[in-house]
Length: 223
Image 1 (cartoon, rainbow, N blue to C red):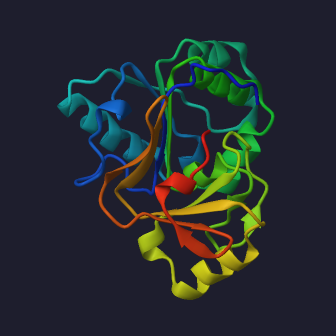
Image 2 (image 1 turned 135 degrees about the vertical axis):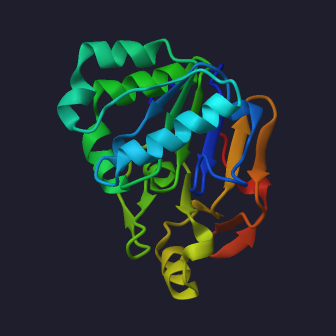
Image 3 (image 1 turned 30 degrees about the vertical axis):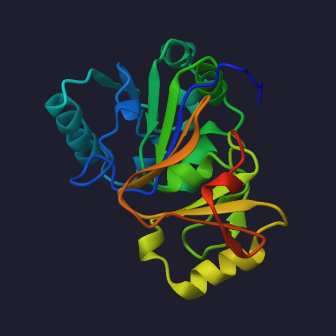
């Protein structure tokens, strides 16, 4: 991915976006927000999007949906053009494997990364947050798979509060040497702000590991 010195904020949420107790953070509300529901294609996206619409409306935030659910849609010029001018892109939770299959090496992914590198907010929730990384964590068993590679040197375990100790132990054991693994519970987020660094938002309980040992936020790489 192309680097740029004016990259915008990166927000990785553990899940349960747009619900009571989820981060109500100004950095998530840089309007207008372009919502990408690709990962929720097989998980009743209409219900999820209705919740998001209400959440933004209550906060007086302008938001629009980019209805990309299949790979051909991620190749369309008009879809890519909408992302190129976005101020904030929010990738909803859902199926990480499906998100990867739609976006992998697509013009849409290139446009998303370019917008972020030029100052837009890039936010992703649940399995979508780990899919932005490479490797990504497969939530079904805790092993690793090839992700989208937007974020280097870091992967996340979303919905950490739902994981068993056995599955978490497997993930940490399989993690490549030097890879930073961040566990993010529901309604919690890791936020990277240019010039400021990493911080947490929402509920408590975020944990970070490297080479099997628990470490602090200062171990998180700069995206």
